[in-house]
Length: 496
Image 1 (cartoon, rainbow, N blue to C red):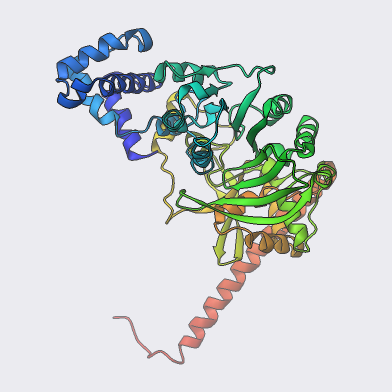
Image 2 (image 1 turned 180 degrees about the vertical axis):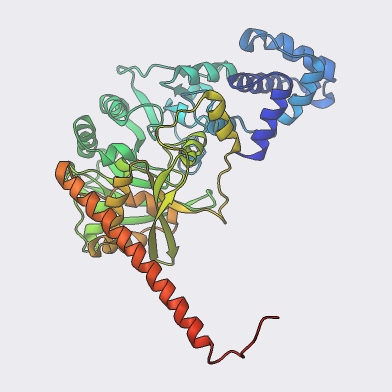
C-alpha cells in the first residue's frame, strides 16, 4: 500500500471514519470539487473553510448522506484527500467489492478512446467495473450523447451514479440494441470467464455494418478452452469481420478486433506494454485464415508462436495450463489487497531471473501463515495496510502456488531439457520478465492423477532432500579444502 493511501486512512481514522465509509467521503469531496469547478466565481475567488463545509454538508446529503464529523475534522481531511487517486484507493484496500481502478488498461484503452474521437455514432464501453480509473478520461474525451457505460456490478453502478450523475450508465446490455462501436475489457476479476464468454458470444455481433468491436477477453478463458469458453472462442474466430487477435502482456488479456472489412487472414501478435506503462511494442506472427484458427485444438498465440520456432508444445485443451495452477507477479486477476494476503501465507514459488534472453529459475519456499489459518477482519486489514508492493529495483519475478505439488510439477517441467527449450524460446518474444511470466502461464502439462501423482511427489521430495544433503556436504568439503590449502600461502600466526 502506498504511503499516500496509508496516510489518508489514518487521517480518516482519527476523526472516526473507517473502511468503506472512507470511500464514501472521498466521493463526497469529489462531488464538491465538481460543484466548485462548474462555478466561475468559486473557481476565481475560492471558498472559505466554513462555506466549503456548508456546501459539502448541504449539496451531498442526498447522495452521500450526512457528514459524520464537524468542520474542524473536515479541514483535516478535505485537502489531503485529493492527493489520493480514488481508483488507487479501491485497488489497494478492497473496501468496495466489485470495483477496480484498472490502471493496467491505460495503454490499450487510451488508444481506443483517442481513436473514437474520430469516429461517429454510439460507443458502448462495457465492463467498466474493471477500469473505473479510466471513466473520467472517457467522459472528457467523448460527448455523453455518444456514450453508454455498462457495468455488471451493482456497487460500481451506484458509485458511478454518485460521481457522474449525468453520465449514461446502465447495468443492462440489451441483446436487441445495435451499437456503432463496442469496447469491452475484463480480466475476470469479479465474474468467472465462462459467464463473460457466454455474454460476449450472444452480443459480439450487435453492431452496425460499419461498426467496430474491441473485446479484451480474460487470458483465463483462452487457457481453459472447454465447454462454453471453447465455443465462444471458436465463434469469434470464425466471424468474417475478425481482423486481428492480440495477446496483451502483462495485462493478462486477448484482444479480438472486428472491423467492417472482411479480411482473408487474421493478423496475430503479442502486444507488450513497456515497463514505464506509457507505450507498447508489437511482435507480429504470420497471419492465418479464419478456418485454420477455428480448428486448432486450443487456440493460443503463444503456442502458435512456439510452433513457428520449431517447438511443439502441448495443445490439448484437456490438459491444464500453468495459469490454472498459480499466479504470477502482479497478476491482473489479483488486486493489490489480495496480493498482500497471498504474500502473508506460506507458498511455494518459482523465482525467475533474466540476463538478456537467458532465463534462470529456482525453487523457493515462501514463509508465512499456515494455509488453514483464518483471518479476522481486523487481521485482514492490518496485513493489507502493512503491505508495500516492491519497487522496480527490488522487484522479484515469480510464479506462486498454494499447492506445493503444483510447484514441484512445474519446476520439473521448466528445468527439463524440453522445458528449457520452451523457456528460452519464449524469452525471445518479449523484453520484460513480467511479460515473459504471462506467456509461461499458457504452457500446458499432462494431467497427473491418483497413484501417479503420489509416486511423483514421493520421488521429487526424496531426491530433493538427497540433493540438498549432497550439496551441503560438497560445500563443507570445498571450504575445508580451501582452509587446508591456505596454510601453504598465508603467514603463520598465533592468537594473543
